[in-house]
Amino acid sequence: MMTDITERVRVDEARERFIGILGHDLRSPLAAIQMGVEILADLPKTDATILERVGRSAKRMEAMIRDLLDFTRGQLGDGIPVSPRPCDLGRLATDVLAEIQQANPARVMGLRRTGDLRGQWDPDRIEQVLSNLLGNAVAHGTGPIDLAVRDSGEAVVMTVHSEGAPIPKPKLATLFEPFSGVAAGSSGLGLGLFIASEIVRAHQGTLAVSSAAGEGTTFTIRWPRRQTSEVPAVLPD
Image 1 (cartoon, rainbow, N blue to C red):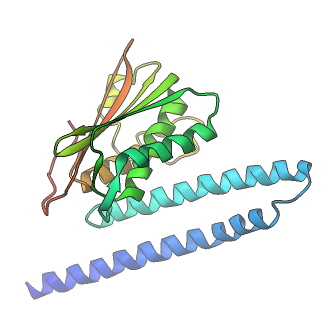
Image 2 (image 1 turned 45 degrees about the horizontal axis):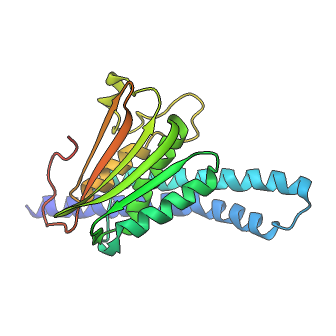
C-alpha cells in the first residue's frame, strides 16, 4: 500500500511539473508577441493591417495553448478543475453573446433569459464553454443564432441553436471526443467540444446535442446550481 501511495505521489508531481513546464514554455514567447503588438499599436495604417493579423494569430495561439493545457490536465489528472462561486448565468450569457456579436456584426443573434439564473459555478469556465458553442454556431451554422438561459428549479438550462445543414449521425456519436472536430482548414486542435463537455462534467451537469434537417442544431447544457462531492460517471444524454 505504501508503495502504491508513493508511486501515486510521484506521478502526481511529475504531472504537475509537466503541465507547469508546458504552460510556461508555450506562453512566455506568446506573451512577448502580444506585448509587442500592444507597443506597436500606433503604427501607420499599412503596417497596422499586418499588426492586426499578428494580433489575431496570437489570440488563436493563446486559445490553442489553453485547450492543450486543459486537455493535458483532463488526461493526466482528475479532469478539468473548476472553482465554483456565486454568479448569474444571465449576466454571463449577455456579456459573452455581446463579445461574439461584436466580432461577427453581420450575424443576427438573440438572447432569452427566464427566471432566477443565479447559482454556484465557475464563471470563467462557463464563459469558455459558451464561447466555444457560440463560435461553432457562427462557423458552421447559418442564419440567426439563438441563445436561451432559463430557470429549471435545481438547475439552469442553456441552449444554443443555429440553422444549417445537420451534423451527420456518425459524427454526432463522437462529437465530444478529443480531436473529433478537426476539419480541413481548421485553425483549432479539435478539442473545443471535448473540453466543453469536461467542464460541464466537472459541474456535474449534462451536455447534449440534437441536429436534424429542417430543425437546425441545438446544444443543451444543464448546470446544477450546486455541486455535490460525487461526479456522475455518465453525464451527456
